[in-house]
Each structure stands twice: as structure tokens, then as C-alpha cells.
Image 1 (cartoon, one colour):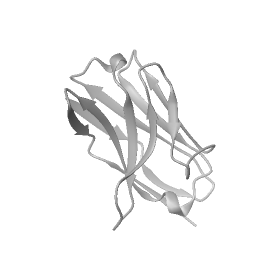
Image 2: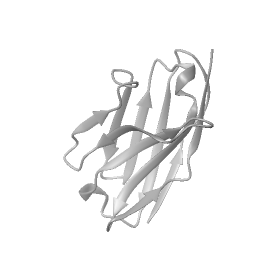
Image 3: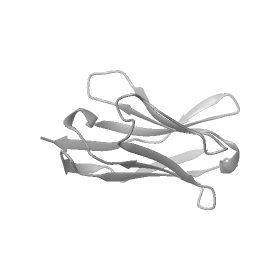
Length: 114
């Protein structure tokens, strides 16, 4: 199982970024997937989840600004981030549970300047 995250970068407050997570080794359409983030010196936190049925859940701090989506034809997970704030600065990780084990992407850095 491999997850390859990309799309991070440096953006000004109020800007947008789109993260992608290309997966392999799983039957993508059958699994719920998540985005987590970890600010420097802090614990990793759940940002958003999308189920195999496309149901979505978001952390309170990103509701109405971030949108999680999936393309089952490309085995790829996305996170559209709008109205970015400095407090969104973190390393972002995609995540899946497969056969009872956690798998993580390598992380992509998002930095929002004020």
C-alpha cells in the first residue's frame, strides 16, 4: 500500500491550495480515506474524512473552507483548501486503514503567510 501526497506550498492568507494523494495497493473505491495535519510541535489532528459512499466529515476549524473529494477512476484523494489562514500551516498527511493497519502518505507542507 502506498500513498503519495502532493500539492503543498507557500500561500498568502486568504489564498487556496489543492492537495492530492495518489494511492496504490488498495481497492480504492471500497475504503474511507482521511486527511490529517500536524503543525510543528503539536499533535496530528483529523482534518476531513470521506467514506466509500462519498459521505464527508470535517474538523470544526476547516468547515466551510475545505472540501475533501475522491476520484475512484484515478485512485486519488483530494483536499481543496480555500480562505487559508496562518493557523492552517502544517504538514498534511493522507491516511487509510487497510486490513486493520494504518497507512500514511509522506506528508506535504502547507505554509500560510499572514
